[in-house]
Image (cartoon, rainbow, N blue to C red; front, side, top):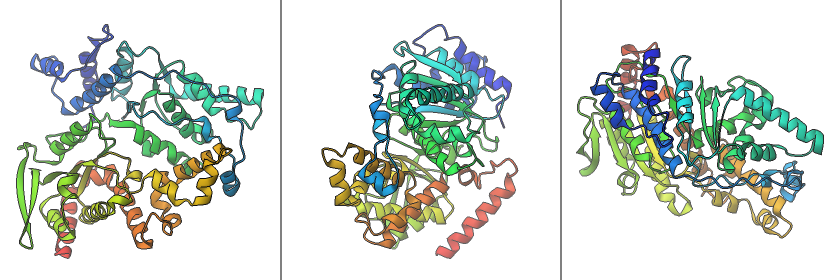
Amino acid sequence: MRPSQTSAADIGTLLSSNQQSTTVEWRTAEYDRRVDAGLIRNDEHQRGIIQSLQHLHDELRHYHARPVVHPTLESLKPKKSFLGSLFGKSSHKSAISEIPSDLPRGLYLYGDVGSGKTMLMDLFYDTLPSNVTSKTRIHFHNFMQDVHRRLHRMKLEHGNDIDAVPFVAADIASKGNVLCFDEFQCTDVADAMILRRLLEALMSHGVVLVTTSNRHPDELYKNGIQRDSFIPAINLLKARLHVVNIDSATDYRKIPRPPSGVYHTPLDAHAASHAEKWFRFLGDPDEPEPHPEVQHVWGREIKVPRVSGRCAWFTFDELIGKPTSAADYIELMRSYDAFIVTEVPGMTYRQRDLARRFITFVDAVYESHAKLVLTTAKPLTELFVSREEIQESMGKGAMDAATSPEGAADKAGLDDRIEHLMEDLEHNAEQLKNSSLFTGEEEAFAFARALSRLSEMGSREWVERGLGLEKDGGKKERDDWAKTRSRQMEDSM
């Protein structure tokens, strides 16, 4: 059931009393006090949203953005490079720096009209901690109009070949290290073509983004022209912002669906609470406290450290770090409908055995139609192959060119190529199957298939299947899912 205007007002009542303080903390203790006093009604979904706002607020109190350094006009001019000549393009990549490792993940609040997302963002903006010395709040449509005006002006002054995006981004960053967008959307091909690099450039200057939208990032620019060029922007949003659904799910279960997606990166202060929320949601709402269980396969014991209902929770080391096999995973699938695996590391060629074992587990989860929640050190595309490995696999000639004294532009071209491969690794396996990254074609496609399956299992449709949460679903859909799982289990016996 979608939150009513009253629900949105409830959150507003909770937060607005603190607007006069620049050191405001949205504490669940204060929420509890007001619930006990009868001032607002208890809503677990609201608690999850408030926690997300509180987490970012706490991070910003200890975050100090670096001074913005504008790129030189010379660095914005196109440079033909060795790799650029191979791939038929010039490179501007060097004008955008790496995103700082300490940049807090922002927030992407999405939901239907009237769900209170704009009010929440405004309150967040009004009560930012005092150490946030500059901030900007703007409607996204107005923001993009201003960006295009700036880009046009720079091209008039310096020529059409100049890459004006990094310069404009630096100018915007200098006016606010917290940038709040209202109504993020993409309906124009001109916006789609520049958004990824614009957002990346802003983040490289230490800008923290908070935005509202009517759509999940995957639904942005859904049927737009050249949508493939916009996919990297979607991936960047999902990797660098916490995506939070403001709409409450249908109240079929006693514990509402957590507001964020099932995968959490990196292993930061929020990772534990992410896993706990999903454990409560997927477990037994009447007996949420975890307890250990032991399963048996072929005379051996499989220790399951935390169980609630039909949900099992392992750390990566507890599940994959031990000598487990496909038979163990199949037995687990018979006993549980949902799995939470925390502290998943990035795996390089030195951990190929771990990676193969984890892929076998992912395949078992997928084929049994079970649920999977992860907290990972790296984004999904970097779980099995690191950027360094891809760089090594691209050949000595390219590496020599990129490391030569005159090879700065070539290195930028190499960075572009690596970025392209990492963004859509599952569809680039064909290019990588004969590289030194994999022992053969079969391994390359096993890794690509795992990424594809992880992507599918992260969708809302997959997560809600069988839980009676779909708008037109309920009991029939849950029963159909149970029959499908039952048939699959019989086939695997």
